[in-house]
Image (cartoon, rainbow, N blue to C red; front, top):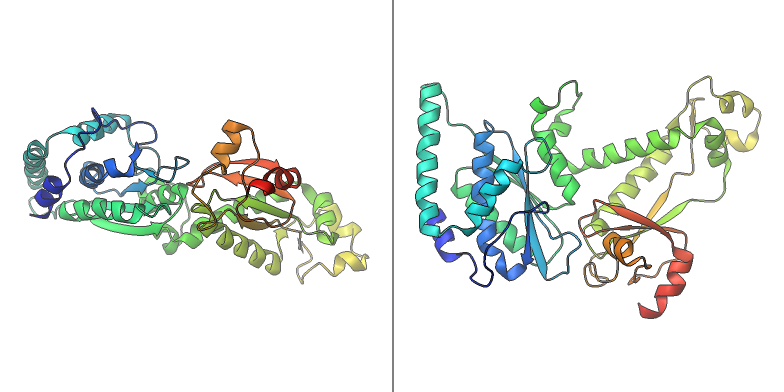
Length: 359
């Protein structure tokens, strides 16, 4: 069958002593990973079944590693890391002979069927649900397809999200298991985990943060003629595809009125006679248009090699400004790593002068 073909055709590499699942999952040169991808498709299905059909996730990425590397990490149903007990299972599955693994899978399936029949003779088999995401590496798609094929061969339902950031994949898994989110108010699309809902959550959190600056700051921003711009170093990776969507939603929010201030705010009363401030006010007297940050990505996919002398990991570890493959203006620059889950900040006026000669 399909599972036997995959396991036989993609055996563990003999180039290394053994594979180890660590905090970052499996990370190796891409040529060492096909067998791992097949086996993680199997493991994720079994993990979902062990959680009574709750969705889990597979993320194909090597984060800030060089472009020739790749990796895979699993997300548990709560949107967090794979449970520590299952990390050992992942390591064992990665290294066992394919023939032994086939027999073990057969025994697991028999146990699953027996358990379900004993629980309720009229019940349907427990579903197995696996979400899959990947970064922008050229080999990530073909590697993720191996995990998808294996999960499908196990009988799982697979949701392939394509190119997403690692936090997005974890978010999708969490939102798919709404039973683990008590007291949460979700729309239907939120429960499914569409990308727009993820971006909306980030924008909402940002607006809440900006709102804590208070009325005085909001007044200054509303009348300011200087737009605040942040240039985002995307490490030539996935962030370059997602920042424009985030920026688009910020612009939409700005056009719709920006931040809601309480009626008692000093700005509401003190600026009522100001023509300059009233021009930046919409019909609701409690809503003012602030100079929301304008995000401009640079070092996007196609500009240069992934993570090479750029991105958050490089800046943090080397304490150097990143190399700029896309040279656009100056301002405040923030650096994100290859999977867009962390960042550092630097001033790109000096950054540009120190990096432009090498870019």
